[in-house]
Length: 244
Image (cartoon, rainbow, N blue to C red; front, side):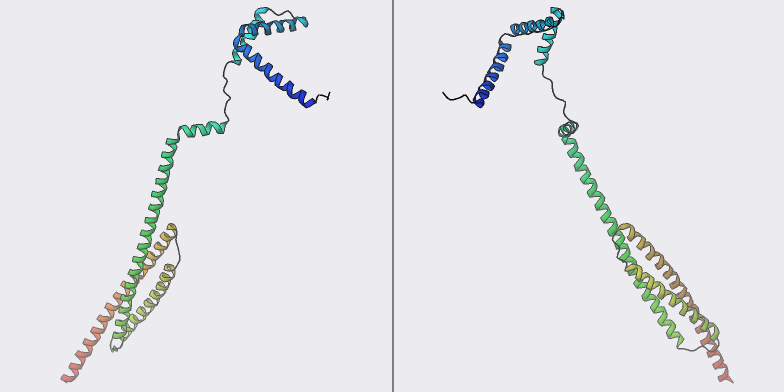
């Protein structure tokens, strides 16, 4: 006869233990009162073997509370992240609405920023167009000065020369401001704050150019008067000399 293998013995004992546990569980369901009495009796014998006299009422109460807790469902408290996920799921509609509202708000914000940036760029373009027209007008004043300067003055030479020198100096200043305007205009800016600063610089330079342009127009008007008076004096003296 072959020897019994230990693995076979342990496997059979494991099955027997499972069957014994199932038998106890079945007995608990079919005859709970008898099971509790049996457990109470064994507990009492245990205490008596140790010289402890425990009342039957206390033992019975302890056994009853033990079985009542066994049949009571005790839910395990979930972790904080599990509770958070559960709350988010229960209130998912609110969070969906908030998410949509946030997207709309971001869209409005970026759209408004784009529109404002577009407005600033358009104003810079208009400022550039105004500067081009101003330069053309200044060039017209300069040509008129050159035309008037081709007719020499005889009796208002010093006054006319002073106006010419002032106009030449003012035109040189206007050219420097034009260079500063073009240099500021050519700055590659993309952010709205930088564009606003660029616009402010361009407006300031343009206002100074416009002021010099008006001064140049006043000088031209004064030079015309000086030239007209000088011509009249020449005509009067010429007539007087002819009358003699």
